[in-house]
Length: 198
Image 1 (tube, rainbow, N blue to C red):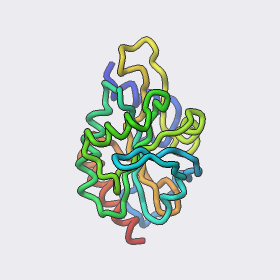
Image 2 (spheres, rainbow, N blue to C red; image 1 turned 90 degrees about the vertical axis):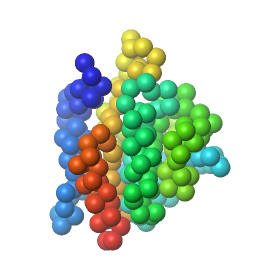
Image 3 (tube, rainbow, N blue to C red; image 1 turned 180 degrees about the vertical axis):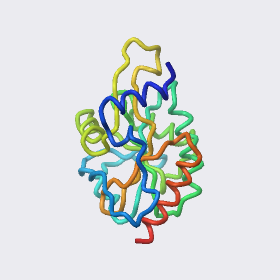
C-alpha cells in the first residue's frame, strides 16, 4: 500500500476536514474550518533557535505543513515542494513546518534540514515543541492525521498528513490543499494572495 493511500485512509477514517480535500476556491464565502490555538513552541532556523508563540504569526496569512527529518516517505518531496513554493508567494505569506517527531528532531537537526532545502529563515519557519502540545495542535486545531507505524522500517514509523493548511491573519483555518497536485498548489497560491489583500 502506498504512503498516499495510507494517509488518505487515515484521514477518511477519522472524518477529518483534511481528508476531505477541502479548499477555498473562492474567498467570496466566509467558510472557516476552525481556529488555531496558541502554543509555546521552539523556532529552529539557520541563524537562531528561540521560543515562539503561534500567536506571533497573526497579522498575515501563513501555510502549515507537517514533516520529520528522518522520514523516508513523502517528507523530502513535500519539503522540495515547499522550497519552490516559498519563492512563488508574496513575502508576507510565511511557511510554517511542524515536526511530527519532536523527540528526535532537535533544533540543530531541524536547522540542518532547513539549510538542506534552502529555506529562507525570514519566510519559512521550522517549529518543534513538547509532544503533548504538538499532538493537541495536530488533532484539535489543524485536524490532521498522525499515527505510529512501529513495525515499519526506519523512516516510515510515523504516518502523517501531507496536506498544506492555509491559515488567515486571525489564526483561522481557511483551506486544505494537496501538496503533490499542481492544481491544488495553484489554488493555494491564489487563495493566500486573496487573504493577504483582505
